[in-house]
Length: 431
Image (cartoon, helix red, strand yellow):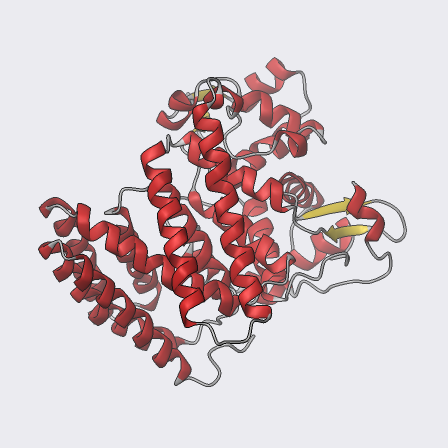
């Protein structure tokens, strides 16, 4: 690729696998990647490498180490490291460079490919023109609100607001063009994986062939693709290449392997977390300030909650109330590992009332990036989770009254309250 010519040859970056292995970052929790199901070793290591790079400011062009060095650092075999490499290469975040000065090289993340991933994901789940209209309006309101509160002088932060919003505006425009075209759905049969990246390796090509085995609807419902032995024979490939292809699909949450007779590789609807993390990689690669992303996130959340207040039904309100009740029970039980997932179940229950998958994807992508800088400070997280519960209840009251104004005020109060609490912990942003 053209940008490879700019990559330095001798710089290196220590991944600090001990930190990564201990799950210090809460990014995975925030975007829902650490909830439910099992995670294969290669998928876990690939995810945590990206989280480490995001938290470190994305040292693009540097080498994370050779295949052997990475295997030793993470305590896994070289075959698994090759699976990790294939995952990262398909995502466009890193590439293995051979030779004495090679290693796993951190790439500059391509904004067009990242936007394409969001477009594919939204089309897979059937976003409508009406939902795109709501998203367009929400982004326009966010731009106006951020512009109204900025200081008189313009500067870097203002430019970064613009860059973030223009990225999402571009996704909406691309979606509008694709939906209006007669063959938009067919063009995006490969779910959220970029064909250009898939076709660079044997494993990627196998993954693409498997993605084309059935329609998007069949893929999401769960389609048994076959056993490892059957699929290796069908595609005429070695087991190592096939397993790399499977890990590519599993890392996107688009398939799962079940052991035992009569099982095998089964398709499933891809997870939002994988594409949300890719957006965080893009922001880190582009040098976007996490605070600028947080401000956009907070303002977009106001628009989503306001939209949800219009649409909220008694059933929606009951779902939010149940999620709040489970969070309260988790907090009373003082089980730290069980609280954070409940927090984001509440958040997702609130956002889902807006019934707009593209806005839901945007807000999930935005909230992930700033969280990569937040360590697992137990005292801070406990205080914020309790404050979150308290400040989320007025949002439910606004939904029950279908009051847009009350919902907007409640969401703004929640953002202010959590920000003030975070500021009270001086080490809350320490790496």
